[in-house]
Image 1 (cartoon, rainbow, N blue to C red):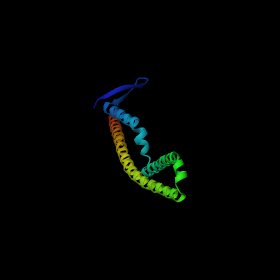
Image 2: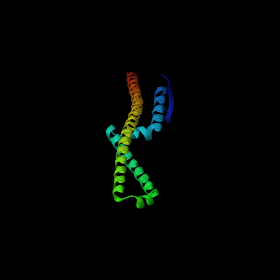
Image 3: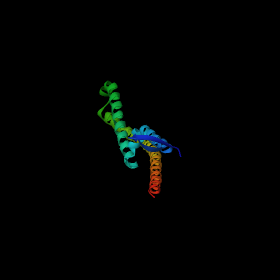
Image 4: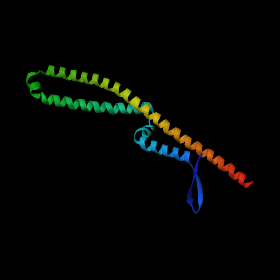
Length: 156
């Protein structure tokens, strides 16, 4: 194992392990790269994350559907007012509502699988990050035991 010495201050030197330095750099790169996506997601349980995202998706889908429906009604407003009876309009409204329910169900099923896959991928990245941190911790422990033995041998 290769060690470097760095000056801490007032002539005191500290050994820095090359392997530990590489692992710390790797951990920092992983943390910077994945912080926004994966590590924040790690605060959620799987069901909570998927439920939250599905509810968010449902609201977005309903908003988009209603917006498109309003635009369609405005485009066909003259025809709807002059040529259609109230019963036909009610039937069209019921059909539009049924279409919304069917499309929303399909959209939520797809959303479930998409967000489940995203969560699984993010958890794997978090596990990689935690594994690097454990390696660094083990190196610290090994080095502290080694230093402790050396200091005990020095005293004797």
